[in-house]
Length: 53
Image (cartoon, rainbow, N blue to C red; front, side):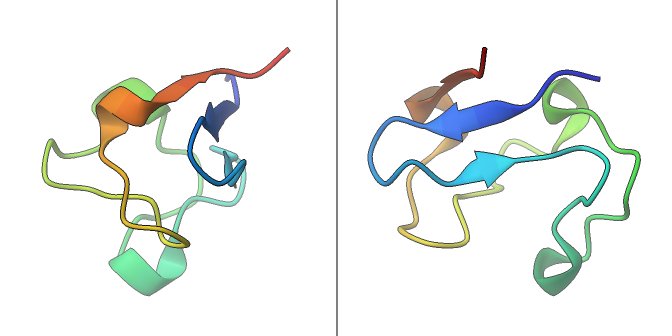
């Protein structure tokens, strides 16, 4: 699964790690994250993320 990076603060969402602090289990793709999910570092929305190379 593809990693995504926040264009505001450069936080990388890695599906292999998920976002345990937000209740997102490892293995959840970025596209399947709930719409209200925000960057855990800066609060940016999913729209502020882009695929990481």
